[in-house]
Length: 69
Image (tube, rainbow, N blue to C red; front, side, top):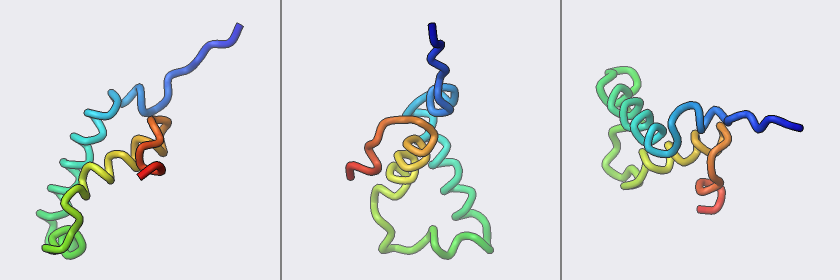
């Protein structure tokens, strides 16, 4: 019998948790005078935060939405 261990994605709380994490990360980067340049451009993709969340989620065992997009 094998135990299916939860992924880091599941431990973290799933998709909603990764969106919250990406929003917090983005806000901190925008607020930082040394890090804000690439995060504060007007031509940034409108779904940057959601895409970042999907990437992190997939890398940590979540659904493959980032790769499919």
